[in-house]
Image (cartoon, rainbow, N blue to C red; front, side, top):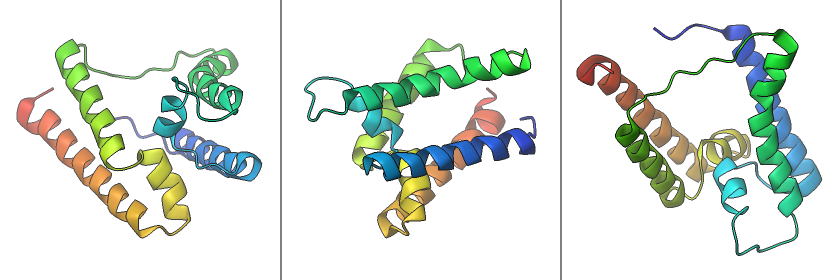
Length: 142
């Protein structure tokens, strides 16, 4: 069973929302992680490479900052099955391209702008996640 962590989840949600608002305010850009990360690769289309790089570094540094502040290791459970993880990564990558964005772009930024396209995308993301968790936990037994 997944541990219930309402306080940590609330703080995380506030930080995600705040970062999305600040990125929109300062850069005029939507905080879609897949778009930000993909635009770190050549060809560079604009001059905001450093802000994108800083955003991604912040994603990586956040758990390290939590460990430094709390003294506790951040735990995350992922599969050790390399084939499964590769298939999952390819499916997520395909989904973000096909859906013109990821869960952060559609779910956080798109829904807050009342975008119908983002609502449909987010419903599809969530439905797929529900089915995947059910299959892995109750059918496959992972």
